[in-house]
Length: 492
Image 1 (cartoon, rainbow, N blue to C red):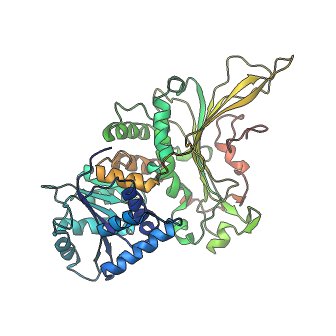
Image 2 (tube, rainbow, N blue to C red; image 1 turned 45 degrees about the vertical axis):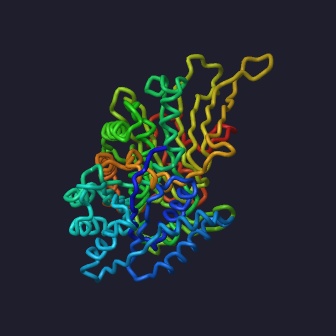
C-alpha cells in the first residue's frame, strides 16, 4: 500500500451526474477501505451558493442512492467531515481569487492540491488558465495535479490546441487525462496475464496468431444523447479512446518495469506503430452502419434516424476497422476492432485466433482461440482440440474456462482505482499526450472521409448480429466475427 501525502481534492462540477454517481460514492468507498489519508479534504466547487449543511445532506442523498443496503455510520461521519463546498459563480470576476482565499486555510485544506475538472470540454482550458492566474498550480512547495475528463479534443488539431493551452501552466507530469476504462481491473489484468505466464508470452506474436479481435458492443441505443451522439459517432466516442487503449495493452511489448513511465512508454510505441489507414482503399479497412428499428429483449425499439429525427444523418452507431501494427512482433497480423450500439449482446472482450495446427484431422477441425472477457464477465477462456472418445479419430473443441473474479474478491469501481492513483501520483492508468495524439492521428482521416461521404449508411436491425456487409474488412474468407464465449455450433 503506497503512502499518500495529505492532500485536498478540489472537485469542479460537484453537483453533476459524474460526481453524484461515481466520484462521491467512490471517495466514500475508498474512505471505508481505509485508503484515504487521515489528513485529506474534499472541496466541491459549484456554480450556486450552498451551505455546508445543505451540501452534506446532498452528499448523504448521493450515498443513500448508491448504497441501498446502507453503510457504516462511523465511516460516514469521518467522510462527511472531510467535505466542504465553495461557490464559484461564472459571473463573478473574482471567483478564483475567492477560491484561492478558501484554499489558503491550511488547517482545513492540506496544500497538496488535485483538481478534478468534471466540466464541459470547452471549459478545460479556461479553468486551467484561471487556476494559474491566481497561482494555484505552482509546485514550488507542494504538488499540484489536474484531472481532465474525456474527450481530450475532438480531433488531432483541437487536442494539440488544448495541450498547447494547458502546458503553458502545467508540466506533463501534472496532467492526468482520465479514461475510466483504464481503471477497470480486467483491463489492467491483460498485462499480467500476458507477461506473468510462460504459457502465453512465447506464442503472443505473428508466428502463432492468425488475427486479433477487440470488441465493445452494447444492447443500449443512444437514448436521450442523440444530439451529442450525432456530433460524435461511434468511432470518435469509443474507438478513439477505449478500444484503442485496449489494443495498446493487448499488443504492447513487455515494459522494463510496472512504473508509470515503463507502461506508458510501451503503449506509446505500439500506438505509433499502427499503420495509417489507407483512405484511398477505405472500404476494405473500415465499415460503418446505423441501427434501424428492431427488437431488444422482446421489446420493439426505434432506429437511430427515427430517434434523431433526421433521415440525412450519416453518423455511425457501428464502426469496425482493420489495423496493422508495423513492428517485428505483429507484422502482417490483422487487428479487427469494432464497437456498436443496439447489437444482440453487450460484451467487451479480446478474441485471439491462432494459426492452423501442424496436424489437421478432417476438414472441420477448428482453430484454437484465446478469449479474454472484460465485461460483463471477467474471465479467460481457451479453446483447444481434443479427441472425441470412441473408436474413430475425430476431434472437437473443448474449453478451458477460468473466471478472473472469485467469491470474496474486492469489487472496485474504475473511478475508485483512478482517484486513488491520482492521490498516489501514479499516472500509469492515465493517458499521456503522445497516446492521445497517436489515437486521433489514426482515426481522423476515417472520420473526415465518412463525414464527406453523404450516401445513406448501411442499416442493421436493432438486436441483430453484425451486418453481413461488415465482413468486407476481413483478410481471409474463413475469418468471422467472434461472439459470446460460449461454445456451440460453429462458434461464430
